[in-house]
Image 1 (cartoon, rainbow, N blue to C red):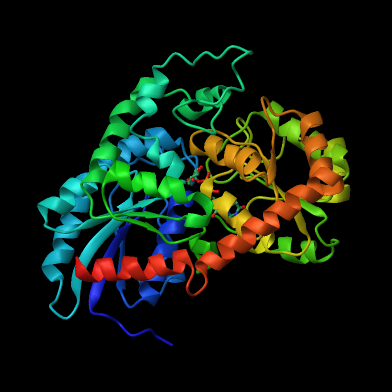
Image 2 (image 1 turned 135 degrees about the vertical axis):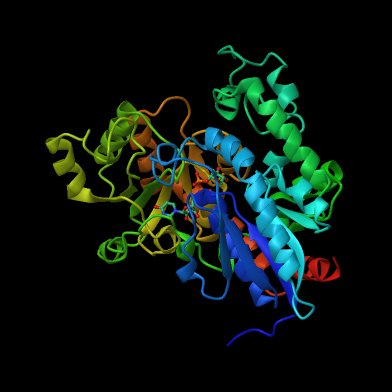
Length: 454
Ligand code: UDX
């Protein structure tokens, strides 16, 4: 049944990456269920499938990217892409928003714009059109809070890190360890500084900051976010607890995963996925393959086409290795992840710790083996292994022996049982938060009222 409309329209503008489109469209559903009408402005690149969301209006703008720039498919070189569309999309976005405001009727006023913290021009455009803007952050608040201090941390001289200091905590950024820093900054170094500065400035000028998180996961960080950005903060919970991400999938999900899982024993399967952006080398790919094969544990492995550098899909696997993998496991190009994690057969998740994947795993009570690729994933994985103690961190390079050991520890040994128990406690707390009366649930009400009053 259609919810009662409140006469207000919210404009959403996701960053065109899977890990950002999912939360934005889930937020669209959350706001729609509170009576708001929804218009989604999106780029041509990685355009969401409008037909999967018949209740929303979709408007495409030009992103100025050429076919060659997007030839890698939906998971391109993220930073270079972000830099380009942040220049190319400004003018088309301004024209589109202006048009929408001109058309806006008294019976259905446009109340605000909500867009991703990674857009750099939207605050200026919204201000010039007198439209309030709210920011959606798709990272853990603890990570976003570090944006103002990351340039300083980079110049502190922690890198290159010596062996004796590798495990030391970064004083300005716990529980991150000094050895994590090179992967946080990647190859970008000081080139990141203007980007970070712009994100902080535009967020501070906004009318509010929305996190897909909750007090049960990071109460202190949410308070600190309020102090740093000096705008109202809304931590409305893991969005997929309210609406599944599967309708916003940019890739075709292999539905044969579910009947295959149906033939496996309870909590016996390790699910392996490194999300939509992380790429690995052929050597790393083969190490994962051997580690899984040697563990003798059933597995479901998502190998995203193009994610193994230099290969189309799984061709680097020898025939012998394929045979041995097929005895116990299944390899797919893309999975219905939320459904997979919720399946009774799943006992562990070998993950890159993107924030969406980490939250989805917590909500389904699936303990993790952490193999972070970079950026915020380094921090998420430290929280999983060192703070919440609901997973095992694979340190250093990707190694078959380490993978085999971690899989066995998680699935068969006493330590795995303890991790599972702690995971159950955290899952229950987060579950309470999104239920009627919970902190996230109440935060949705506060957000809806905030938008009504803008
Ligand atoms: C990126 C960043 O890497 C991440 O750190 C940041 O927090 C958000 O943007 P991504 O790497 O794609 O995201 O990871 P993640 O945040 O985990 O998002 C992936 C999404 O794709 C999840 O919602 C997951 O359910 C979905 N997915 C993944 C599938 O539906 N099927 C798959 O096979 C794999």
